[in-house]
Length: 101
Figure (cartoon, rainbow, N blue to C red):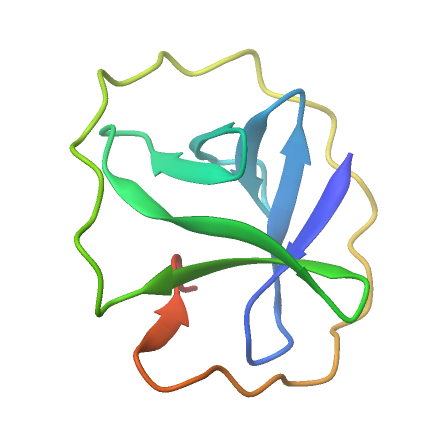
């Protein structure tokens, strides 16, 4: 399992077998390559590694990919112990977190 953070440093959730879950185990979406899609098949951003941590970042100034057919929710995984929050990062102009809490 891989932890995912928001730019504020808050722990968003985790990735398990290509699926994204919130910190409390709620199914949020899935990942194809580095593209992240929500439960409705909408593009939410790109999975990026910044300072050895994973973030889902959306460039609001570009044309977004067309929505995908939604994927069904997988079996709920065992919740990992949440990591401590990370230091806040500064996103460039036009970028924002793909998900928020």
